[in-house]
Length: 96
Image (cartoon, rainbow, N blue to C red; front, side, top):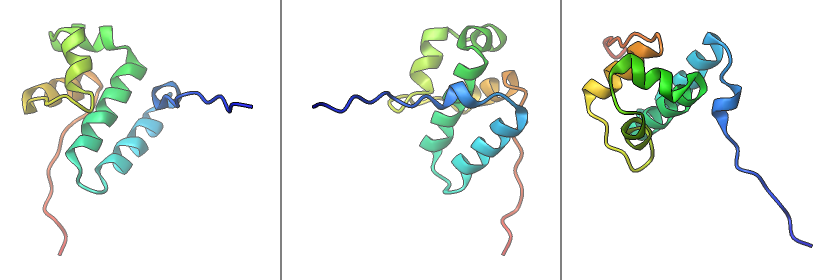
């Protein structure tokens, strides 16, 4: 008997601003830029990639690619996507 599994898609569970905030906080914990990139992609899919593409002025297909594991988004792309998602990028000093 073969075990059948399905891929888990976190974007189906990012329903509230709190869910999104917590998901991003977890992605940022280790300082891994790929985790942030993938998390932004998941959130963009949850909000609707076509809508995000329209708000950023970027091509939908290039957004999918940029926010995938094989993508290499520019800081400008990350900034535009964050703004379209209603997020504000901030920097603060590291606590010693």
